[in-house]
Structures are given as C-alpha cells and as structure tokens.
Image 1 (spheres, one colour):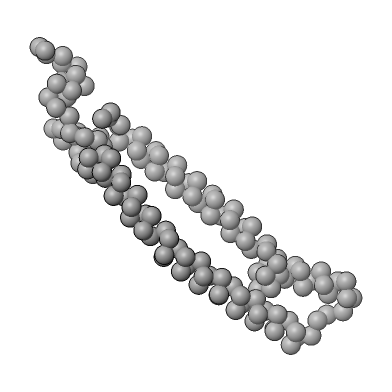
Image 2 (image 1 turned 90 degrees about the vertical axis):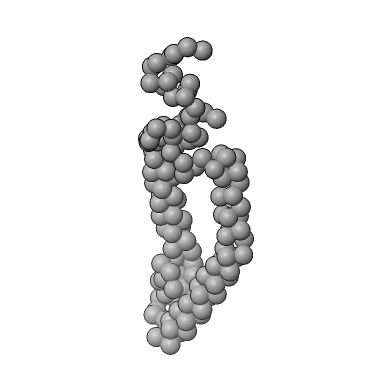
Length: 137
C-alpha cells in the first residue's frame, strides 16, 4: 500500500465538508422556491394569484392553504426520513466496513515509530528509506 501524508487526508475532509455545505445550501434555496404554500415559493404564488384577481384572498382561505401546505411538508419530511433510515444507513455501514477491509484496518492506525501519517505500518526498510538512510539491502 502506498503512504498518504496526513495533511492530504485532512485537506480532502475539509474539501468534502465545504462542498457538502455548498450543495446543502443550494438544495435548500431551490427547495424553498417550490410552490408549496408554506414556503417562499408558495407565498410568491399566492401574491401572484392576488395580483391577477386584483383583490386580497380572505384570511380563512390563506389559513386553509397554509395548513394544507404545512401538512404536505410534514408528510414529505416523514417520507424522506423513513427512506433515509431504510436505505442510507445500511449503505453507510457497508461502506465503512468495505473501507476497513480494503485498507487492512489501517485507517486509524499510526505509522511506524510514532509517525503522524495515516496508513499501514511501515517496515524497517521503508522507514529507513523515508528518513534518508538507505542502509544495506
């Protein structure tokens, strides 16, 4: 197995977190503009409807529309969370197990002689080569 310096691992993790935050923000912005009555897109849709009707909708109609939107949003969230628990959790556990098997359990191990890198333990010859002492073969 090849040796990967610890700094590259941390840079990869930080990049992954930053990209996840970016995509989560974009996903939230797009979802917020959907024409579901309780979200911003639904409010914009109601305002456009009032503009074309040239009068305000009654308070009872607005409340009923928002209640229906709230119930729809809660059902959607429960449906997505149930799917997440059923599908994503076993995949997450399986990916961790496969990663551990492919790396021979070297994910959390430290290198030889207290090395701060993440990777398999190095034998004496590779350790000497990394320190600049080639020694006898």
